[in-house]
Every structure is written in structure tokens, then in C-alpha cells.
Image 1 (cartoon, rainbow, N blue to C red):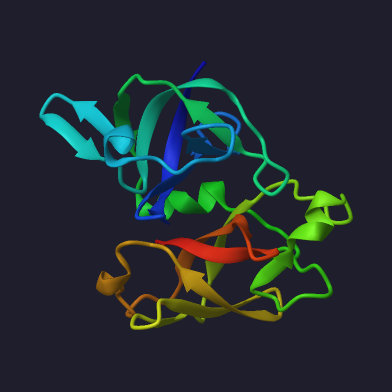
Image 2: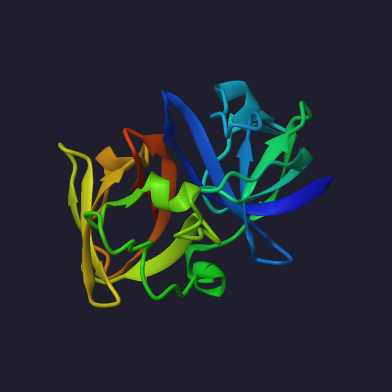
Length: 202
């Protein structure tokens, strides 16, 4: 099963990689993972081949990726297990093209009982909160980044969020833009919660 994705995030997970992108045809999210438990990807698994050599995948590149099968989790329904075949670069999109891929949720997984940087895992397990997608690509106009503590503060649909950042390029954050695109992801379970993460700032 081969798909072409626009990569929107290559973030840090357990000192390895969590990659996420959208299918160029359906524009639905796919999170390439290493196994049925949503395992992070190693360096070698997130490299692509082009005529000049092998390189780590970067946001906004298009990649042809072969998958073995879909492996959804309750908190991450978009997971697909990758094959051993190296990824192939298939051009890229420009920043202005991101608008064509935006999501428009009413909120970012507000469960009604937790602080709004997390979701109670038991609600997900018991189907009291159905996660139909665990990744959103949104546009914000008031982003504030704390590089030292790796936090992002922004408002979306009249709610303010203060979330951890897992974008490895955060030290190069440029605060001169009028607006930013964020990939917000629902992470794995940790001490009873799934935390909301800013996986990429574009």
C-alpha cells in the first residue's frame, strides 16, 4: 500500500521521530509508525532517497511511502505501520499552499473535565470521548513561544491553549510572521492523560 503524503511534522518522540502528513489525494492525516502500538520511528526510518543521497524528511516535502497496514489506536486513529522500503521524495509544497490543507475543528479535544492541555485517557478508553482524528493543522495569529520551556501559547476559536512543543526546530523560531500554521497532535497516554502537543510550527 503506497501513499503520497505532504509531511507536516517530524517531531521529537522518545529522542526519535514522530512523523505526520496528509494524503495528497484525500487530504486525510496519516501518522507513519513502527508497530501496532504506535512506536516512534528511528533516524533511518525517516530518511528519503533522491538522486543526491539520503536525507531526513522535512515538513512540506511530499513523500511516497509504502505501508504494511493501518494500525489505529483509540487516541490515534491515523496510524499506519511503515514497510522497510526507503521513502522517495516527490517534490514539495510552498508555505502558501498550506492553506489548502487546513483543518477546521470547533476546539482542540476539550473533554470538559481536564485542563485544556490534556485529555483524560479513561474517557477515550470508555468511548465517552471519541477521537475521530488526533492531528489538526490550524492557523493562528497570536502565537507566543517560550523557547526555554518549549511551550506555545495561542488562542483558537476563543479558547487559549498553553501546550508543550515537540518541534525539534524550536530554537530557530522566527517571531516576525503575522500568522503561523501549527500541527497539534494528541500524544500517547502518560499518567492517565493524553497530552496535546505542538508537533510543528510552520
